[in-house]
Amino acid sequence: MPLGGNVVRRDLGQDVMEDITMYTKMSIEHSIAHPEEALEFAKAWGRGIDDETNQKFVTMYVNDRTIDYKPEGRSSIRRFLQEGQELGMIREDFNVEDLSFIGATE
Image (cartoon, rainbow, N blue to C red; front, side, top):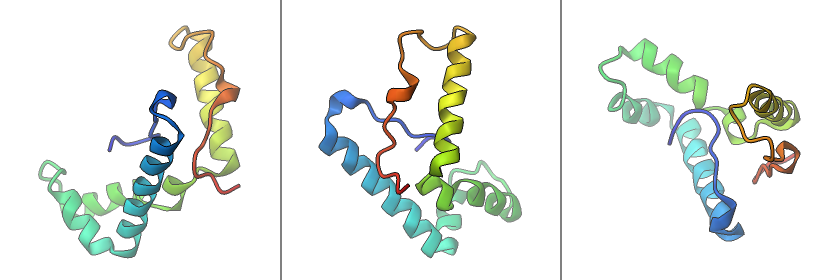
């Protein structure tokens, strides 16, 4: 999966969006519960980075905030997208307030 926010197209349907969310969450939870295994797996994609750098990198992205951004994180994403609209990088007709954060707990 790419780093950062994971986005799912709505036209795939609610069931597919929820499945992708569920399996992504399960993968993150597994990695949190089994950090040695997660670090070893990540090393294969690390392009030769050392163990310390690998651990720092993985723990930046494999954590509770990856599972749920929480309200302030969702607000930050909306602001980021709004600023992108102001710069002309995101279509003006994209409704930032209409974003769905599937799996959000708060």
